[in-house]
Length: 418
View 1 (cartoon, rainbow, N blue to C red):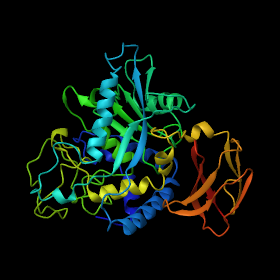
View 2 (cartoon, rainbow, N blue to C red):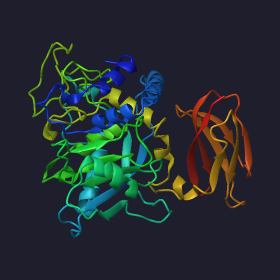
View 3 (tube, helix red, strand yellow):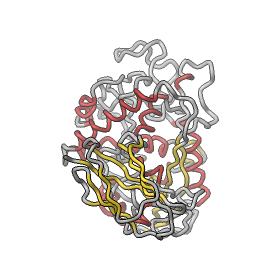
View 4 (tube, rainbow, N blue to C red):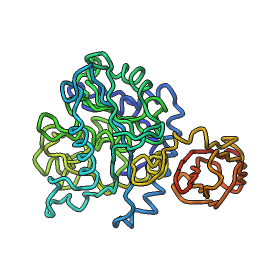
């Protein structure tokens, strides 16, 4: 249940060796813990994001009817060892498209194995109104399929090599794209890991994104695979349902996921662990949730509370993803194309900024400012550059500036610190 987020920070720092027999399919929280160990200031950023998330839930939880679908452009980095396309780890375009379709089914509650209307958890199932597309524009503004094939010239990769070598050399602008690496992930120090993701509060410009082991990508040998779905959940700020405080009934900061003693495995029979020491009711644990470790065949849902957390993230820390234009359907270009044409300085400042943009003077240009909750706070129409903005009345914090013309759109983050 939802509690003070500092408790979450505490258990994220705890050692995962409390349950040695447990197979860690996901490395996201270990990665997060390591980041906190190297930079304790991450906890402040994490607590700030949690405060923004709580505010979003307070304002929006009572209105969960169909709303705006948020679209996220994806670039799939297909890492191989020189194999021909469609063989070995150089998976086919068809399988990549299958994986994107799988993500959309899971996040839009369009999967064929949703809970029946009579199931006690049925009403908790959520259409998260989040969709994914393969990017249609690359960081240079050129057309792309959204699939980049990279010969890493090695048979397998461990986590350290992925984060320190592979990612920095291949990543696309993280503010415009969800980077998804499909790679033969073999780490002797963490056996059994199928994938991992960076949390929004502890990511970096060179490591941000999702990693999925190639043997679990899209379709595991003809069987259902939800590894990418699980890891994208972390990327959008979801915790495991047991809160990772194993084995002590941890907190995942979601009100409608029953507390769990630890991760589940296999395919439990419902109800599993009813009225247990963690405080579940007669329905027991939600082992069929995408953020558990149960077998993929019996994992089928996100909850409304999880939807709120993910959408809150997409209106704060990951807002620029939904505004990059890299999904196509418009003539918009991603921010990275305009990186040398759109500047804000000084940044941070006490409230006065100069905006520079090297654009066609005949294009009508509008500038909008959003706060960290995604609320529009200022708008300027038909501006010319350089353009001076006086936002001294705004509170300290993080904001996003969106520059839009008939053909282009770009979003950049700026900060006010008085």
